[in-house]
Length: 105
Image 1 (cartoon, one colour):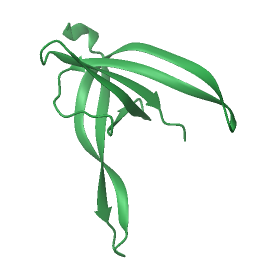
Image 2 (image 1 turned 90 degrees about the vertical axis):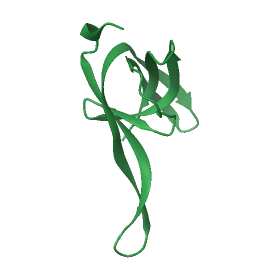
Image 3 (image 1 turned 180 degrees about the horizontal axis):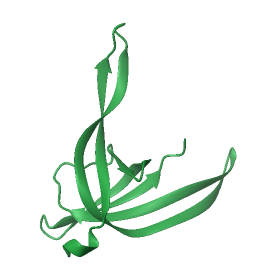
Image 4 (image 1 turned 120 degrees about the horizontal axis):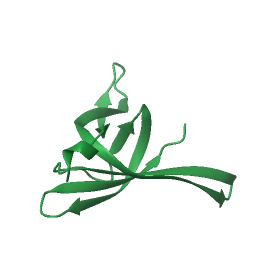
């Protein structure tokens, strides 16, 4: 993996539960890592669903290996949140490929 291609910065967040002042559990996101990454692919697709048409933006990132990234985490890229749908290791702890779907507000 050539370092010159790692021109994007992504942040990996993990969900955690905290208790607020009133004793109510609240889900928050904690920073797990900040990684340099290469954007391999970015596509937008339109799907017809039960509630009508919806767009889905898919982005694939390739970055150096970081142990512990799961599908339960999310990636933040250019201020947008993306669900991590697939984590594919590259080689033997050489890198990781993340397939992500943008979270629509």
